[in-house]
Length: 288
Length: 199
Image (cartoon, rainbow over the protein chains, first blue to last red):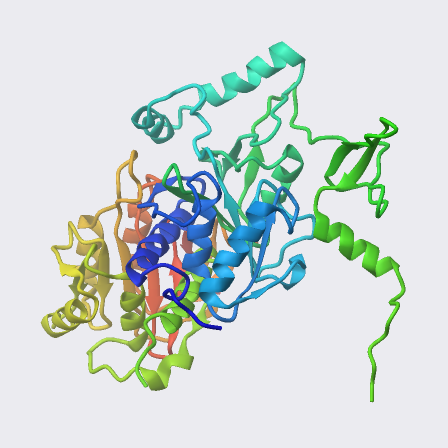
């Protein structure tokens, strides 16, 4: 393949700056470290933070997986994969287990990650207190003083309105007992996967110019009240209509002809892997 | 063949990141041995880390009995600026550094402030004894499953001072340790380091 750009798109100076920032982020779990977010060939807010992290990490021997809302084949994932592949020539995969770097938008894969893997999450709004405080300087002060009344108040308002904490996605978490962090817009279903994860999790917000991290085996607790404990989305009584799995995050879909509701695994590669493992191979390997 | 500034340093970075995420994990960088033909009075792993992380945007300080030569070489190889210990982003402690200078340096070095805890110094320290996971120090904290043992050449007074600098977490210093056996390991500010009891 002909390379027309530098390996991994960036100049080495940019990589160094992102790498130094990432190391600080790992040393201060949950704290948003500012960095000089670069102009990328995709628009800010479309995964540039995650992309910059991936490009600073990736080497010739890596295998990359990119998912967008659980899907390997959606536009955002495919565009990012193409950009990284064209500038690095690395191997791409859909199999979660086969990847060394997994960049994801809004999901943590269903398959358990290993110690050898790095999960990169794309973040649109890294500041969990932004809804209650517009000023960046003020939110930095609130983090400095560990003053998180605003985050608790948001949950309290949900309880007053709906009778339960009803964060659709991006339910705030307490990391290592010190920083309240936005886990990126993953469903509540994925929050427990961050706790004591075997893999390193890096989060990048390109538009907001922040990098933060959750090291492996780190305490991550979803914010909740004693009388209103944290709960994940429930799919009780439903199963994926393709593979029959029950204990995963399911998408609710409507059959347009019959108007019936049905459910399907959100993590497409997990669903396909399960289907493949159940089906006997139609064509076996030919051994001479 | 000299070090490949793109691909070799990417791998070194991943080793540093892995050790920073899993404090006390000792990684071997011997694969670069033959390519390191630099004449410099520090461990090759120390130079590899500086080449990976330092550039013209950051400053460094060298603590050693005879720091001038190493100082000039690192500045020439990385384009980083030399600065006093109170201002330096990276502080490089060579194996001949007297304990008193290390302790004094740690007390003076940047630990960040509560609004910007990342404005702290990162220490690259040479252990004169090979790093290993034999029991001497007990490490606990984020990145460590239960506890990790680590053996270094640094005296209890240095660990005592390091613990003082990280007492007001999130303020503190992060350490990267190197040795002559081509090994590195990291101890970020979140790691609780305690001495093992002598049995």
